[in-house]
Length: 286
Ligand SMILES: Nc1ncnc2c1ncn2[C@@H]1O[C@H](COP(=O)(O)OP(=O)(O)OP(=O)(O)O)[C@@H](O)[C@H]1O
Ligand SMILES: [Mg+2]
Image 1 (cartoon, helix red, strand yellow):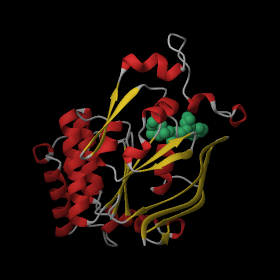
Image 2 (cartoon, helix red, strand yellow; image 1 turned 180 degrees about the vertical axis):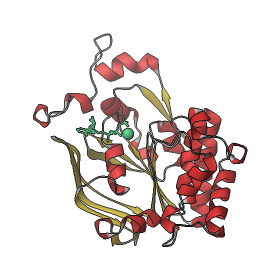
Image 3 (cartoon, rainbow, N blue to C red; image 1 turned 30 degrees about the vertical axis):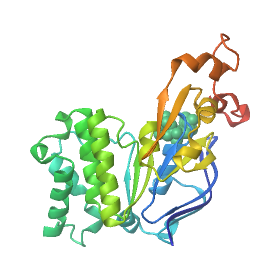
């Protein structure tokens, strides 16, 4: 049974169809990374899986139709980490991480010893114990991002849906957090679906990549198959070199090739990537 199964998922926001007919499954223990240019629909797709947006089609989590699950039932199965979380500035880090246990609490909403233990473990895993009593509003962007991730881990769900989990982190923390997620995946059989902009990190940690552009999946497969110089030029308007190594691929921006790769004619003006050029004007998208 797949950990996550999407069948014909389309999502409209206002007058725009932002996600178009996505059918994909993610197997238990797999790490799938959704990549794609700004506005491709990554966040929209992940928010729908997290139960935060209405959609057409079907989303199954652990074999169950997500639309039929009660909110706390879904939250015990899917931990969703938003791209730009709004956090209560005055709340302590410890109390915030404990909120991750909400879907596990009983009728009276009181935490038990195992809820506190799960929150402490999440704080430890993200090196946040020294910050436990600090107000969220007093943290740096990266510290806050770790607190949000700790809250998602405390939720103890078998499927982690992470929208740009490393965006605010320095290069060392990026690697540490992704290695931690990978270790948890190996040790507890977690399934991970994340959106990431950093193509090298995506190419090193993902089992499989989904490249989204204009709301549709335009490529899917092993990082070395999806991340080609040609595809990155076409969908991002970027010039890169792709280097294979034992963990996957490394994607290096390479300015010297920019003019030729992106415009197709050396020395001519920069052209918008396909994502921007091919947008249907009738969709109302900018
Ligand atoms: N409420 C809304 N009404 C109309 N369009 C919206 C709405 N919210 C988002 N969009 C549009 O949907 C498209 C997809 O947005 P989404 O946030 O899913 O992109 P993304 O791939 O996560 O981009 P990024 O890499 O910048 O995070 C964008 O063009 C965005 O402007
Ligand atoms: Mg996004």
